[in-house]
Length: 426
Image 1 (cartoon, rainbow, N blue to C red):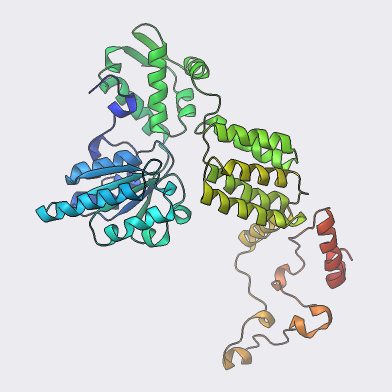
Image 2: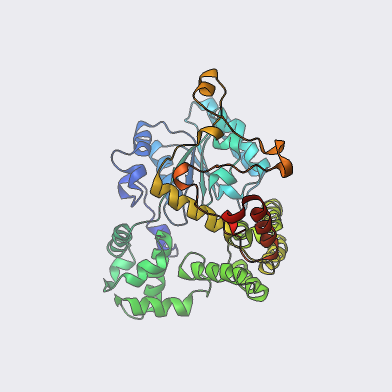
């Protein structure tokens, strides 16, 4: 093993009994472990944040099953690369060898055509696919491919697991064990790692390489000082990541387009996934602009679609346009508050009965029981409105939607007053 390898790579486990974390998947009685031990595994998508062992687990599976292991990165590979691997796998079938495992890192970055190129080989068993993604595969993996794979969720490592990893590194790594390393404090180590094993080991390696001498006492102060000197200001996986996202959201909500674009630029320059930013804008459009400007949601959805279609770097322009549009739009959180208030009441009151007159009555018996009796069909009345109760009797006076004081919603309020009178302050 080379000393030039990063610590995380030197310590990468090769067997399940060395693997730390994800007990719900590979614990002694877990389903995935049983499949691995049986030697019969399906195609799999591993979904989880960075540094939780997706690649390592794929390699362990291949090693345990003694399968040929091909790996592609979705960032650098195309349809041609996929087809070459599939052809190699087909040739091995003539020698009665087990089908190889094709591991695709960041499979969410594969285009539809690239994912389509995998379908036939996965379906007929030419390859067993293991994909790794940090993004929800329901959105990022095409349905035909997703339906042919089992999806397993990997979680950030817990505190105890991270500490176990640190202790293992200090004791087992052939470089670290030559030094006298003491973990005096672990709070900063754990905070900066954020449940990411690779980042944790990178931080330890950075400290060991930065501190002179062979006696190293790692404490919170040393960790913080070392990181401030050596790491970029934007850390897309640590505390700064969440701080900058928060600043971005609050700047849009606070109607400051300059600040919003600045924090957008910080995220882009820091390597944030542009699709993640597009999703945040979609949420912002509904949560913070809402009914004050319903077009905002359409703009954000168009942005989301465009970013997925064109990718970076061109998508930065689309993101900028949407960010400025949302920041300069009138704001309303009335839709957000309405559903939150309704959810709170549902949790408190449980399953209240649907009023009989607004129930469906497809059978004679239901009609005899009073279903749909006295229901007023709105379109049969002047102005397409007929006053009647739509809420359960116990909560019929409750209000969930409170129009905000913006031009569009004030017009909505006037209409509601015309229909409902005192219920909406008329």
